[in-house]
Image (cartoon, rainbow, N blue to C red; front, top):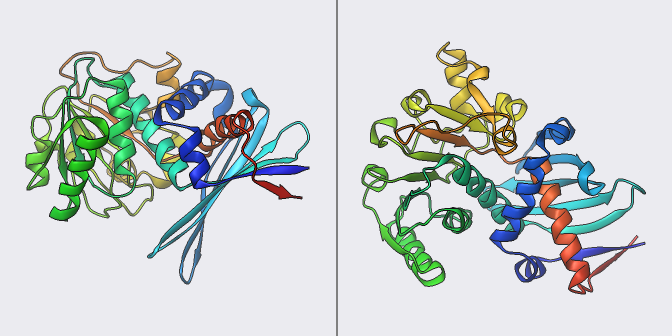
Length: 318
């Protein structure tokens, strides 16, 4: 059988942030029957970096798969492998850098749609790296965003990011001189960094804000301080099982006796209506995004189907 080989260029041509949101929407709608099939991220430490592996079975589409990547100081290379659950055959190998940006952005977009106030129109973003644009695009797809404030440690990078947002999304974007001035007064705040120390403080947050913590996915990283966690009226993550391993902000507060895991919900239960979210316009809501194998497999199923429909010619002879 000849499996598809889907390149970064193919991914850019085949799918958009709206497609990624649709794929994860469908996945979360079936959350209760699917979540037990998700395998939390495993890491193998190596001299030059870390080998990361996530996997899941997606019974809705009769597929299973994995994402593998090697994270090193110079960057990372990502691949997703998608298999048939009926025959076990490899269906596609997907270059997954842009793929991962879209999938990660889509998770924040869905959380924002479920938790942010309907009239939320101002967005603050801390971080201007490779993952940041998809975050803005996804949030703008689900809320009427009229202005974006950006902070990163590099003035040049935050200015370039602001120009890209204005050029590609036609939304006013302003570089901020500090993280607190970026966050203050915003309706939605998204952090997308790998910082080991908090970059967003609870003292900066306005009543009614929704926060997406989308960058730190390891137990030794913390984008949010304890005040943010404790001020939140509703807290959600992708998977409690994975959060127990990777959500440093939650792990700290549970260890300190200030939070119980029962105080954290899963976004799939929120999406399926099993768990309530925001209760008032003044609630502070929080989504701690970690990234799940089931999300990758759900999006890969759409990418593979779209590749067949559009006649992608790349093949692996196996």
